[in-house]
Length: 388
Image 1: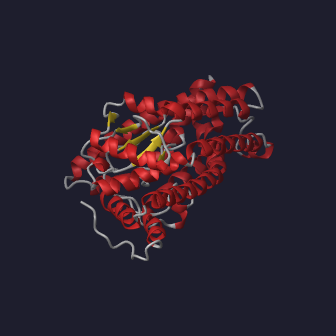
Image 2 (image 1 turned 60 degrees about the vertical axis):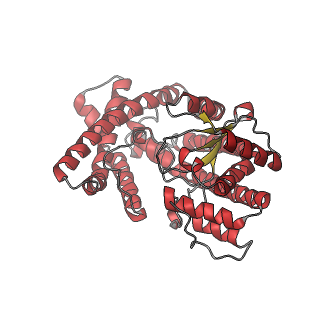
Image 3 (image 1 turned 120 degrees about the vertical axis):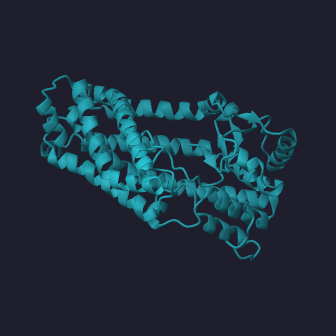
């Protein structure tokens, strides 16, 4: 993942294949932390119920399907349907709150849920076929699986700038005056960005972020259009933070930790999924049986959580270090606090986080970062009004 200045209101892409496509309708209103947790618990319980009740296996038996590829598709559909039902009260409530016309909102919600279900079944099946091929081929499936994940992770880091270039909305070179000012700032920071400052993102959007993508010669500092329109002194603060990530080598240092977490997690999954009592209790002969799909999701979620918490803890440490770099480089803590306040007002970056969200948050909350910056001047935090 790229390093960024502001904790975006849009979370990272979900890890589970049947969560890969987000719904447009029913997600246009803000979700409170409590309802978000309740929705996650409801979908998690639906997944556990599929394992305990052996529902996918019973439906496969009823259909008479024997080919493992078709069996996998049926199981993915059953699991996706169970989770959609568990999620429905929450998505429906958000859809009805999004507009005054309840009939139109209900129609949009139903259409969106159907499209999302179909896409999730297709994507979940396609993504699961290589994994089940390995599961059925060798007990040491986790090692070649890690090689694939590791290769994709490294390739993603290197290719992300090219992916940005292929997008319809950029990237474009930063305005000449802005690019020259930021190059001078980078020189002061001891970083040679060359022509590596670009603008990418949706024009007119609220997101006002900056981030570093790529490795080595492909590395770029990316500004979103809304950030470019900020006062120059606030743009400088955001970019100085990103230069801190660059100068301190955070992406290169994070990558080995990510790869190690992937290896440990997959090795642990290999051990758990070879435990005979667990397989017997789930009504499975082996982990390579496509009926094990919901069990794989449960085991994966449990084992991935500690890795996510570890990486998030390290990410927050890197964010604090980049904040400190920007504060030292520019020596203007008041402007840094103003930049954070504007980010909170304009893009919805969270000022506070409940403990359970903080566990996997890659950024400290805005108020915590502002308090740390204000300690350098003794100024109060959370009271400036620099937002548009």
